[in-house]
Image (cartoon, rainbow, N blue to C red; front, side, top):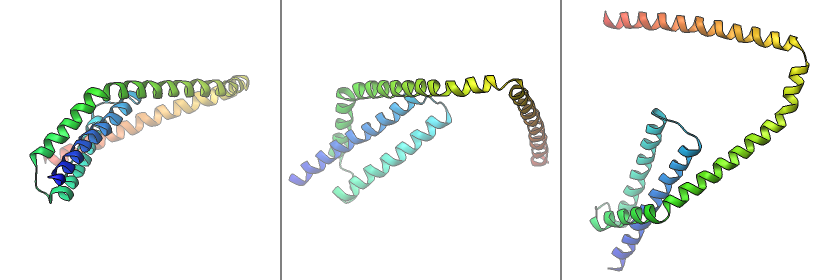
Length: 161
């Protein structure tokens, strides 16, 4: 009986741990906004990791046997963490990280002001060189895009044939 209680406690902590890891992922998403493919890839990696951790817990604690009280313990840990800690943890940690990043951005902008002034005072030669480089890069981009489009069309025709 004591072993089962210990297993239940480990399952409870596993639920808390899994939810904590997901909260770290949520904080990352609030600080560094992104969508679509990357969110799906993050979720896939998260669930692979969680599946591995749960499997290892079941393997070590109950010789690979699925115990429903362990599943209930993990769900209880997730629920308690989600209701009691998670809202405040995600909100305040992401707010603090956003403020730190905003402060770092201000410091970098302040430190880069002398460089901006230096580039402005060097005259129009730098401006002309920058415009020429920009024009050259736009032309290169257009040429590469056209070549890639042509290649893709040829590839589609080859596949259909």
